[in-house]
Length: 203
Picture 1 (cartoon, rainbow, N blue to C red):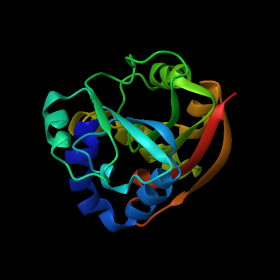
Picture 2 (cartoon, rainbow, N blue to C red):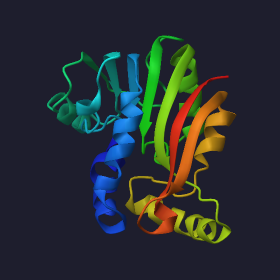
Picture 3 (cartoon, helix red, strand yellow):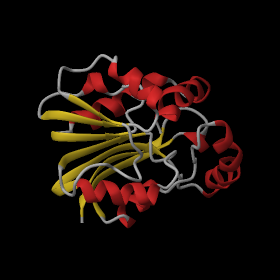
């Protein structure tokens, strides 16, 4: 998760798209977080500077000890941050104990995305929200053809990233009700640049 988001993704984006294109996604998604917030795959802390009230506390989940150490030194918005060195498939929190969950370009590289989303639903309180910005399966058959064929080699060089995960369907199948979703390509190679942005609540 964090390795892809912090080391692989920025380098790939230099080739595939402008990093500046992702900034508005980060700002929109993170600005909607409130209360006790769990960020999945915080990596080296790229999102931490964007948190603002009504967020009250950040639980920063990351399985890589190296990235957790980097994130501890990252600039953040002054909110309390607690680091959880754990995977998204086994979130070390009690049921219904967070108000918002943030995931940005993470579901593509979580080894077991279905399990991770079930865990997110478990720890999210009734009425809480899942906020996401992800890339994934495109609507065009020709682009999907390339995504399916590129994903096996791509995973080996990109920290486990899948180009062809159907983000909206994965979220709904995990028991969430999508409140808002916006999709579309940004500039760059189409197999890598179909974006999903939105919010969902436990169904």
